[in-house]
Image 1 (cartoon, rainbow, N blue to C red):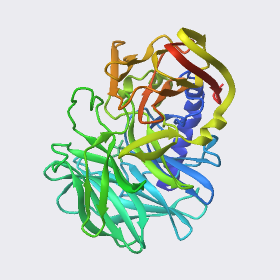
Image 2 (image 1 turned 180 degrees about the vertical axis):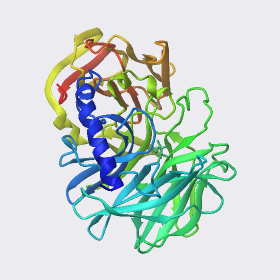
Image 3 (image 1 turned 90 degrees about the vertical axis):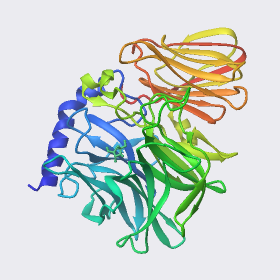
Amino acid sequence: MNRDEKLKLEAYTAVDNQWKSVKEDPYFPGYHLAPPAGLLNDPNGWIQWKGIYHLFFQWLPFETAHGAKFWGHFTSQNLTDWTLEPIALTPSDSFDKNGCYSGSAIDADGKLTLFYTGNVKNEQGLRQSYQCTAESEDGIHFTNKSVKIELPEGFTPHFRDPKVWKHEDHWYMVIGAQTEEMQGSVVLFESADLENWTNKGIISHANQRPLERFGYMWECPDVFTLGDQEVLLFSPQGLKAEGIHFNNQYQSGYVVGELNYKKAKFTHGDFTEIDRGFEFYAPQTTVDKGRRILFGWMGVPDQNEFDQPTVKNGWVHQLTLPRELKLINGHIHQMPLEEMKQLRTAKTVNSKVNGTFSDSISRTSEIEIEGKMEKLTLFGNMEVSYNEETQLLTLERPSYVDGRIECRSCHLKDELRNLKVWVDHSSLEIFVNDGEEVFTSRLFANPENQSLAVCGEDVHLTVWALKNDTV
Ligand code: FRU
């Protein structure tokens, strides 16, 4: 048995041993993607290929810890029913032995081709990183792993997460990097044949206007056109909290502007956080049927993640729903895809609210509130409130570390008009004013608690029960 086969066997054994306790965990999602054992982090290789949606994920099957990551693999025909496929990549080669880190997927002459970072640590614990590829004829079995790019001068080995796309008749790749001056940056590479790559230089970094002192590392960059502009989406590390901004351990957000491919410069405005909740990181997008679709990781590294109560059942973290992005007045709006309507099983509430309305709802529900709601309380301990005077929307929950109430807030540009909330056992995705702001968070309320209370005047409330595969 070679190393790849051995690692796969060990991973499948871990899943066999763990799956029962994972799926019986009342916090396991009913319609979000989560690991069958161990730890899941970033969405990777997100693509629609030959009519099938492929979504890979960073995965450590053996324990709820970060380590030598595999690429797990889900496929779907309709974006709501997913199948866990055989493992796509194992950290089995000398150039990826400490992890097949994040990356992306493209169609290259009819082959599903993955780009990822090979993470290596030598005996002294020193890191090395390689940008690698693997390819597949059938979209399931990946072979021909090889290194395409080695670490260029001027950077530390924190050089990873290749996102590849085609522009005119060339291929381009952005890589999240740390310069030797310990600044976060994004580097652009170009290729005519996907074999030979030219380093075009840094397109944006952490110490130039309008960004200054903007972190020591930028992870998971993504560049795409949205509306008539270009977006650079990335996850900077090392930002200090400023009032209601940057309150998580690390952030994800974007700048809007224009990428000059020849000069390798992205001219852009200020950074906007793409999510306002407690758990969101490392998003990745693809394009399908003219729509720019994002998946994110519903977690944040180093943010007390191993205090989450699912750890005792052998799993941790999940992904978000797929969301369509739109650029409106230079600001990204996000909404779950139209296809998510297929998750609905029944309409369980349809009511006008004047004062306070209370009911009991499924822990897999979609909640729609039209109008200027004042407060939404879910499962006894999660609260979304709107202050009309300050136009501040606030999400509160008890911390899963010590039970103390913690909050995240954002200012709305206009009055609150509507709120859409997707609840899934231990998660919430809250879309405000048609997706102008989003709060993504885990919630570990008592699994038996199904209470909902909405407070407001002249508000309309609709609730649908959603698919719940885990019961
Ligand atoms: C982001 C990240 C990536 C890296 C991967 C490793 O969460 O740190 O930069 O490739 O996770 O799992």
